[in-house]
Length: 68
Image (cartoon, rainbow, N blue to C red; front, side, top):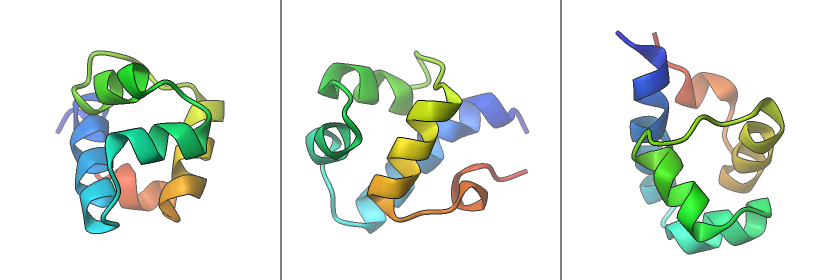
């Protein structure tokens, strides 16, 4: 499994499980909605800093997103 291409899918799944919109996650993470949407579509790479912000917003652990 390609971990990079799975991150966006898992971000979307966890976000939806939390009942949040892309705009809510983006705003609470200090990111633009457009950038966050591109992350979910695997069109952008996420930095460690932004990944940590997103995890905090989603109240998730890295292991919830980085599945192997």
